[in-house]
Image (tube, rainbow, N blue to C red; front, side, top):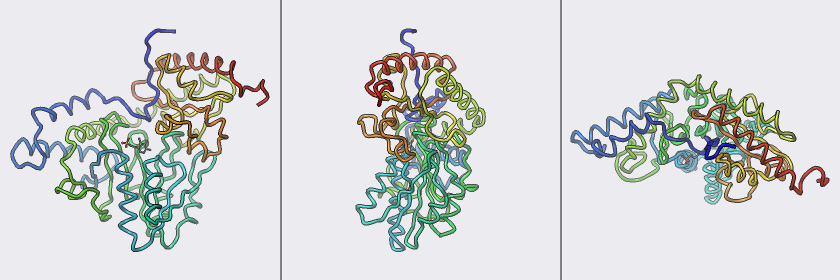
Length: 392
Ligand SMILES: *Cc1c(COP(=O)(O)O)cnc(C)c1O
């Protein structure tokens, strides 16, 4: 095995900042450092840069620039959309609908609302991770005010039928939000075609910097402000803007939009190659989630009879970065709520690994990874107490 080879297959956790993105950001740390709210030239330059970034992010999802509100993260966008909309509409009712496989940014917003006296329905998903439109239809009540269903899942990559789900919510006069953090830059998105009221995005999942996100809010949806203070973000999100972050996010959004189809085809090719090789080299595996409506870079595989954490550590020793289930629960042994929701037995959840390829992944990276994986799996199965031979 080669020494010191580094292979990053965790693009759903975060992505490196692209060179062009960094280059676009750098001047705004130093010579163009002005406060966008200042009236003199250096401030206005900053204001112009934010305007450009807003155009770029809006362009990626077919929105108007005035419908884009920059935030500190995808997490903040999710909290603002769901908690903000629920609080805003609480005179009408206190029922919110989401799904069982949301990111923690959404699930914990739901917990928060429950503590505030709201009723939250967590829709189940089928064995491939899809929310059934019928289930949504049945769950909507007179007091339902907000539905939030993620666009694409971060663990198993399932892409939901968002347009259809959105149509159902809106037919009942209910606001529809989607967490599109994973979908952005990996799925063509047109907010008007979909009909969504709110949509969350994050910079660091699309080769932009960490600590910046955005919430799309459809014109006419008068979501209350998230932060109180100055007049930034049309008075909705006060605080001096993360100028460099916003500039970087804008540039990353522009680059994502330029080669979207090619990017998608490239990732899909690499992902399918990885799956093919794993299938050819390793027995007793199962792919989790749908292979049809799935993020192009995502592969989630169960290696039966062994622990994913042990595989992860052996791969890490070979310089390969992958993830078990979701990064958020990787510090603990809590089984992934997503794999649980699609019916993966608990001992198999613990044997599951998420691989996500990205723009810098090569075929050689995948060849190297499958070799290391083969070695790791046979080593672990040799000592596994869960192995078939032990009669488990
Ligand atoms: C990463 C992620 C988030 C959180 O975005 P941050 O910018 O890291 O806060 C939310 N939802 C999904 C689906 C994600 O993958």
